Image 1 (tube, rainbow, N blue to C red):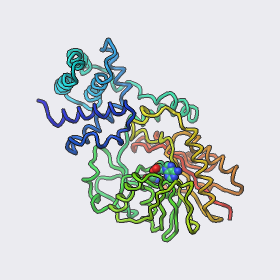
Image 2: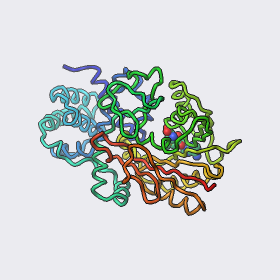
Image 3: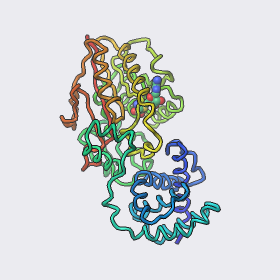
Image 4: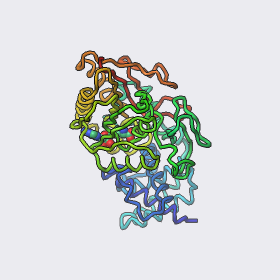
Length: 418
Ligand SMILES: C[S@@+](CC[C@H](N)C(=O)[O-])C[C@H]1O[C@@H](n2cnc3c(N)ncnc32)[C@H](O)[C@@H]1O
């Protein structure tokens, strides 16, 4: 029996996949499915996300049954159906029937391919061995760098973590508070497993928490803000870390170059009834009237630590621009250190797997700034093996495999000489 909502969601997923092929991220496409209900939009996003997460494995299965390379839109449809059948447990008859109908709706080319789609998907639905296929590899430009940094075994473990996706982590506004069904992680974040509708969770309307990966919550814990301290958050939007700083009672200047992202930060602060002084500026040109007690520099980066939650990223990037990003990170670090008073502290953070954006930035900053020291992380829940030779904290998606992993991150706490 065809379910109209499911059919709309499948069609929506194909629209999103086409968008990714055209160079748009899934989050850039939030307006593309306006005609769908919120639950159809959520289903479409899930289908597209899972298809990207299992793209290469779906192609491996399909290669057994497809003779000629199909047009890109038909290939997306076949991958989507393969993932529904073999990963998401979709009922064979329903998925095959709906996919053939959808294919017929794709114009002349779709009509011509409908018979092939029907025959291929019937075979896919009986395919054995999906679970044994290796996890989807990162693209070569990234895989090579990750393997050079951590070795082949860890690279495969990171790819498995990417395939598993990410649970939903929350940071509570009040330390120690909790919500039903959430696990308390060793570092203090709460974790929820399975499909969760964020706006339906207790405490959403009252702003008791915000969504933030457990790894992303650690830079502010490392900075250890105190009530009434004046803290500059130099790359602040959409504001998960600004909210941690504000919730700790700090007076926060939240600077970001993007007006659109600052708007989201303002909405997030408002929902949680927290406040910060928002400033739209290039952080490299910003200087405050008074010296901040501390600075958070959550620098723009390749975001390669977030592939678990953003499986579109490997399809959108080609590795160009990392050198420019590293140059910007170094310039931001130098500028930020110049704003600090003697003895002031700074946490540098990036959601990147690449040492060029993390460890190497701090090693180079230590040679450029005489007397600068790295103070070692001493946070609850941190494994000592995560601390790097220069004294930073390297987090990887393959850590905490039993609890559901964490984003890749690097952070270091610097102190200016007194
Ligand atoms: C990693 S994100 C920050 C995430 C944020 N700290 C949080 O916890 O939600 C990096 C941010 O840096 C901003 N950005 C990039 N270049 C910048 C610059 N030159 N000055 C200020 N902000 C910049 C981007 O707009 C983006 O919002």
